[in-house]
Image 1 (cartoon, rainbow, N blue to C red):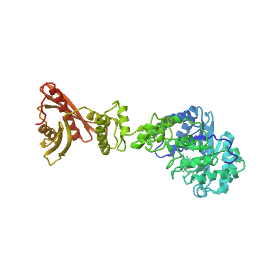
Image 2: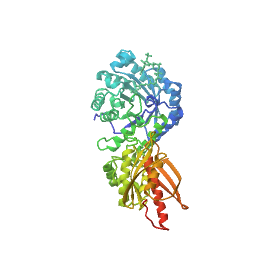
Image 3: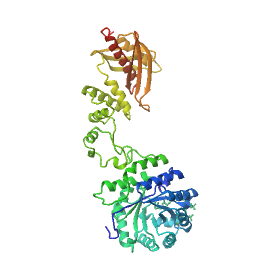
Image 4: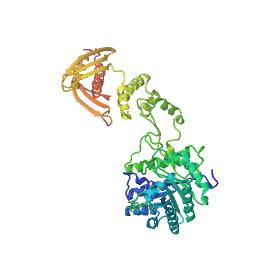
Length: 517
Ligand SMILES: CC(=O)SCCNC(=O)CCNC(=O)[C@H](O)C(C)(C)COP(=O)(O)OP(=O)(O)OC[C@H]1O[C@@H](n2cnc3c(N)ncnc32)[C@H](O)[C@@H]1OP(=O)(O)O
Ligand SMILES: CC(C)C(=O)C(=O)O
């Protein structure tokens, strides 16, 4: 570490409202920007880059209004190396408690030649003029060498020297196109900090894009190379593949404080609410497996992991969900789950201690369901367990095979266990449900009338479980049964059988009898 780095405090510079807003589709209106700015301020961000005031009247107004509402953070406005940009930025920042002008110009040969169409000496001259002009307005001036990572080192050092001499207090060396790699970026900071006279008069800053998925790793490497400001955005939104994600940098520094001994001011418990607020406002969804704030970041599906989590959460979590503002981890019930998690889920759902046999049967059916259904919701498990733990049913469904469709006849081949004996039959009907009920009637003697047949989807989606209700009436006795399954026809059979079992309980109270037809 060079001598120019005096402490280990990292300034968190958030550019969600400026570079983040440059994401296609991320435009925010004034009221939305104010909500984000207030949230960033409360979260402990040190600098909020609120916009590019010369870009439009709307951007100017947004920076100006953000400057009025922000209480703690420095509010920053971006400007090209042009007096009119800088004046406009400063005008927008007039009401800020602390305002910063951020001016930039490209320093790479490619950008200077083709984009700016300027000689390097002209660029150096523009750096001196723009930074001096900004310094005449405020002490807090940041200068950025756009495309620093593709800039020749000698020229970069000369440009940084000119910017510091002109009064820049913060020197930002962006990886504008997400091109660098961690070791190279770290070395670049070390070199510039070592070679540039008066480098210790400025705070060095990183600004990384994610074109190669390295933005966070590069930002951390910059810190290791001596940067003490990190520019980033919530959810990593930003131009093209985005910027370095604030929540990832902050949590890496917090969780790995042993390897990365740096501190910052962020209230990490606000990270998840901030992420949700931003994605709701912009409509840019956060990918489920995104670190820290993705829907799956604290979700565990596989049985071995769930078992470990139930025994000690540290087995599979390196930070607590509470530390990032999430209420708790979730054990997602799916085809990879095991019995420990299933039993725990049943307790959570209020079933208390389910007997081993009932648990085993319900678990087997849950696994079958999970094989067929993308997501198994709590409601699915409730429907399934209610179906299973009903007690000592005399009639049980063993198998069901249906033939249906346009060609007919609709036929049901069914196998039932009746008082422990397996019986099978085939029946036709007006539609598959009628065929099933006729088949059941063939095997189980009863003369109940069907009063109600009702189906509803337990959850959304075409793979949702169906919950069927059947009401039967026999000799003035009315019973209703429920059945649940991802297959509506199986659910229908279960519901009918459930109602019959209830009917037999009622019948038995008057005259015990055999059930088989
Ligand atoms: C890496 C970054 O993220 S930089 C920030 C990028 N963000 C944005 O561009 C969003 C806001 N931008 C805008 O609204 C517009 O581009 C404006 C208002 C800034 C400029 O609009 P226009 O005047 O129509 O120019 P346009 O955008 O077409 O071209 C940019 C001009 O600025 C010049 N320029 C680019 N960067 C700089 C700079 N840092 N300093 C000085 N001039 C610059 C270009 O060379 C070009 O000049 P030219 O017109 O002489 O060829
Ligand atoms: C203006 C600078 C900081 C920038 O956004 C970049 O280089 O990506």
